[in-house]
Length: 161
Image (cartoon, rainbow, N blue to C red; front, side, top):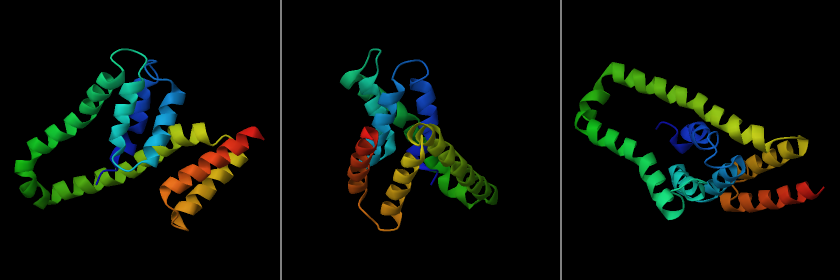
């Protein structure tokens, strides 16, 4: 309803790359890998916990980060659930939810622009590759895993030219 894990991508990047816990390259590599597998993008937090340069990292870091990213939403659901039916019937709550949904569109665009666009699209060849991947996904309904493999191959080929 509110945009999923992509909404927190800029926040995650600012929280782990800026202090030096994870390199920007490792962050973007993990984000790309998270896009290639099914499931919530929030599990990307487990990857970040694993590759952190500061302890705890590895399995313990993954478990801590995974719990930390899911815990607030679980607590919010548990706290709001008893009141949800009454709340969603109110016109003011419905208007607020429409506003939040509209704001998420802007957050998703921001997450697409920074870090994906600014890091991944550095020239005309990158733009062409991104456009081709988009067309494969949305126009020709190519399976995402195949688009990832084809894009990785094309990106590797472009880097050698």
